[in-house]
Image 1: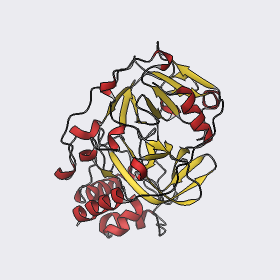
Image 2: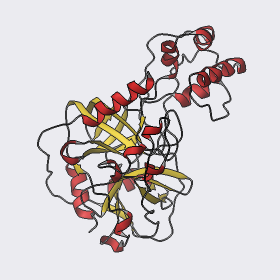
Image 3: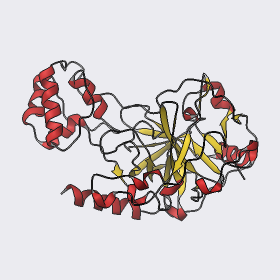
Image 4: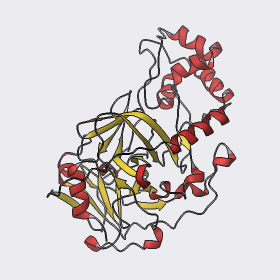
Length: 360
């Protein structure tokens, strides 16, 4: 049952296309802050956060017996419980993703206990939420997904993707710079998921990832507005200059994977996906390329917003569509609320930033 649903969902998602003309923004000037190498500064921080539990806050969820029931129910459903939780509330908060799916009131601890012990799968999903991401390791070496990189270093991780030309990648600004200055420099692995297993063998990767792009060969650039504010989505994007500008000298063979185009999307009913390399949680294990497509996104100011499940380390992933060979609509940031995720939207100022700082 699950196999057919997931494979059909994947086939539908990957075959969905958008038409229309690509939006080209006007050139302009912008402030920036760049890191051309040397000793990094600043402490890492969590790239994304999980939403709060949807359980009624008045319910008493401190009962160890209730926690044991919930863990057993998850294991019976084939969901791993790979963390030592203090109480059910902590487990529920960590298990929830993306949109708030709670559709009935669980007024007290007795209601929660009843559902965990004897409720239907549908009732349990109302409490836990559903992780709708799909592991697509078998596509990690295919276009356009091989353009997405796993990045890590200094005890934290993010995602990134190639865009604009062969020697330029983007990520979220908070992955490389915060109010304390430059964060620890990361290695970048393009096509990283292609040697990873998967829950279903036919979704496992079958190839060998490219060598890592080293920590010392690239330059990092963030907009001046992010360097002075470090909040919101408006300025939460950054560039990895992989060669040419600012003395960058990375080996092309380590990132010769093609690159995304770009398009400004406005209005509602936007079709797109987020694909990246999250931490271990729900359907995804660390190192997996995880993907989710939805057709109900919308533009709000400088943000693209969408009901797509994400997790820590997916910051910097592309919010994209595969139309015209692959176009990014924004740079994924994380979760501002318990009901949706958001990205810094592609627009004039992001284009100006790219054309002022691309690699060559």
